[in-house]
Image (cartoon, rainbow, N blue to C red; front, side):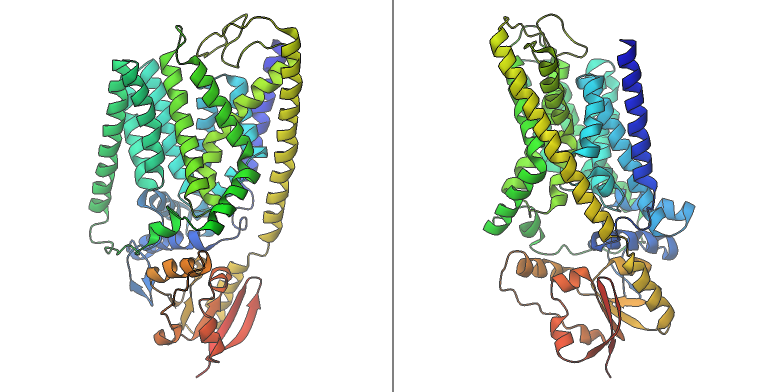
Length: 524
C-alpha cells in the first residue's frame, strides 16, 4: 500500500512538471501565431492602447468582428496591462486556463471515481489526445477558458449535491460565464442537465430535480447578467457589430457529404478511445440505474459529464464543419471515461478474474463507488475477459501514444519559423509610417504598427462556402478599391485564393518572401 501511494505521488509530480514545462516554454513561437488568434489579440491590444474595444480598419475604429467573446479578451487585456503587449503575454491567460482545466479534470475524476482514474485522465490528455490540450491552450482561443468555467461548474455542482447546497449559486455563475465565453457550449451543456433532469423526474428524485432546475435557470440568468455587465463596462468603448449572414450554416449545421466524411475520418482517427469510453460509461450507468444502493449524487454527476461529452462528439460527427478544433472539447471532457475504461481493463487483466467495475466489485465497494455489483465466479469467462481487455488496452495505448507524439512533433517542426513576426518586422521597419497594408491574415494585425485594411466579415462566410463546401459563390471584393501600398498573402488568404484576381491583374509585384508569407508592393 505504501509503495502504491509513493508511486502515485511520483506520477502526479511528474505530470505536473510535464504540464508546466509544456505549457510555458517557448510560448512566443509555438504554435505559430495564426488567423483565429489575430482577431482576439488585436481587440485586446486596441482596448489597452487606444481605449477602443474592437478592430481597426485603415486606422478607424470598427466592431470586434470575429474576435472571441469578452471573457476571453478581458484576461488577455489584463495580461497586456501587467506584462506588456506581446505574443507571450497574450497567450499566457490561455495557458493558465489550461492548467486550471487540467486540475479540474483531475479533481472531478477523483471525486467521481478514484485517484487512479484521476491520474489516468491526465495521462490520457497528455499522451493520447488529438487535438492536444497543451497545444490548444497555448493559443489565444476561447476553448480553454470555456472548458475551465464549464468544468468548474460541474465540480461545484457535485459539491452542492453532496455537501453544501449554497454552492449551487457559484456553480450557476461559472456555468453562465462558460455560456457567455463560447456560444458552442450551450446545446451540449443543456443536454448534460436536461437528460439527468428527465431521469430524476421519472425516478421521483424531487430534491435533485429541483437542484438541476435551479442550475438551468440560474446559469441562464448568470449569462444574461454577464452580458449586461459587459455592456456597462464597454459603454462608449465599442461599436455594435452586424453578424455575418450564414455563419452558422458553415460551422454549426454542415450537411455537405465531403465534410461529413472528413469528420467521421478524424473522429475515428483521433476519437476512437473517447468513443469506446463513452460506450463503456453508458453501459455501466444503464446497468446501475435500478440498483437499490444507488448513490444518486454521483450517478447524476457522471451522467451529466457523459451527456455533455457524448453529445458534443455526436454533433462533431453528424453536423459540424469537421475541423479538428471542434472535436477538442469532446475529447478533453471525455478523457475521464477513457481513463475509466483503461483502468478497468487493466485491473481485470491483472486480477485474472471479473470483479466488477472500477466503481464496484464482488468483494468490496471502492471509494466513490456508485454501487457494489455482485457477480458469481466464472474462472473461464473471467480469463477470456481479462485477455481480451488487456489486448484492447494495449492496442489503444499503442495506437494513440505514437500518433499523438507524431502529430505534435510535426506541428512543432512546422511552427519553428516564427514567420508572422518576421513579416511584421519587415513591414514595420521597411515601409513608410503612413503606408496602408492590405491582408486578410489577421495574425499580422496584432503585430503591425502600420495602417491595415481587410475585407468585410461577410466575405469570410463566402470564402468558406467556396473553399470548403465547393459552392460556386462569387467573391465580390477587390483589394485595389482601398488603394493599399502593400499586399501580404499568407496561409489563409492563399488557401482561400482571395487575392488571386488582384495578383493576376499585375497591380502588385513581389518584393519579399518569408515562410508561408509573400509581400507585394502596389504597381502605380
